[in-house]
Length: 236
Length: 322
Image (cartoon, rainbow over all chains, first blue to last red; front, side, top):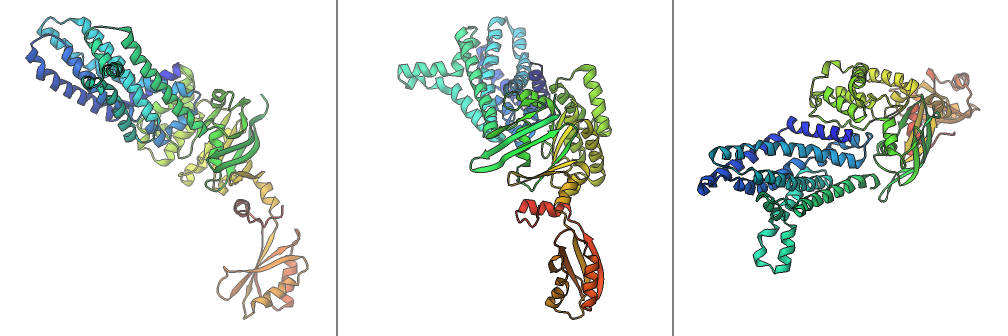
């Protein structure tokens, strides 16, 4: 476990040695600010619902930029060889990488706390949905990050990893947006598979174990595939 | 623990239809510095990647420090310090930060880690650049950082893939010195295509060509094994025909072959005479020249060097009776 944290810690710090973390933080904060304040006074309600609505979507687009290099760049430069030949298993490498990027995501989420705090100064904010909303963001983010890590394990080209991760995350986010034009049973399946469907119920303040399990399962499944990809290197 | 630190048996690695390593069997003992020698693409790097458990062999197996690469890869990795080809490092990290990271990955903590850090930094003379980011370093310094990370946990086995590439002669001699010191109590495998390197650094040479081991010996024995003396006579041309010269020296009873070399200066002819056995033909050559009225300008005896042997073993045209 200590080595997992060592790998995660190194990954986390390395984000701040390069531009990616700062760029993503700036983009998230700017787009969030724009969309949030644009409609906030229209509703004139002390609620953070709108913030979560936007943040869920922004993260689906922003997080693949954090995961694209996780393994792809190590494969391109060859550093993966030194990492794997240390006394760690492939599973520890995957887990460490995941924890590293999850840590950065947590920092980004922490920076957005500024919004609910400023809302609470303008009116009586109900903090319950805010907390469950953040839990939802963390869970949906874990799924998106795990998918990104999986995409990064499939290639040594960061741009391909970015493209694959974006396509998959946006696909799962967008699934419940076309339900009206579909037959009912197909619609309910698609809705159940949609990230946004599960996330929005948490953003409303409802913590349903099924939503939690959904995101956790997606993350575990994607991490398992990333592990398989990393391990298959030995036998190629 | 026995003294056999690396025990490779029938290692074979197939990449699709290409066989990178074929039935490589060798053992390396504690305290040996072994040079892997071979042309590019011969299978040196693949063999090293198998021993470090980065890739698995398609056939055969190996034990490193008593642990099997299939059954206990973690113990194998613990026992090995590895410097991969072209020294891949996290360029955005500082030297010290990076070495600390590697130390922690090697389960070193606290005071123990600090002591090892000081030691490897001193051994590899990295003191001046410890606070710099790896990306700023010259090739030579990067190479030393690569060595430092391989040494930090004082592994019983060191596997170094082309540790000298890109170093200037001064740096190379420092590293060579370091490797020799390390090799006294530990096991070192290093790959190179620099032959002079092997002769000074390694106590034993494994030559690989087309994925197969073609020689396993000390540099001296290798040289001796193929080291039939040759005699090179430089004579004045004086309008002599090629056949006249050959006839003159073919008189020598113990000569196996006489051939003219093409790299002679104007007005001179260089003749190479190979004896049948290990005889010293210098006197015979002198007498043969005198009796044919040939003016002998120079005469020397040459042993075959490692380079010749290497070329013969790895290109397959074996003129070497072994």
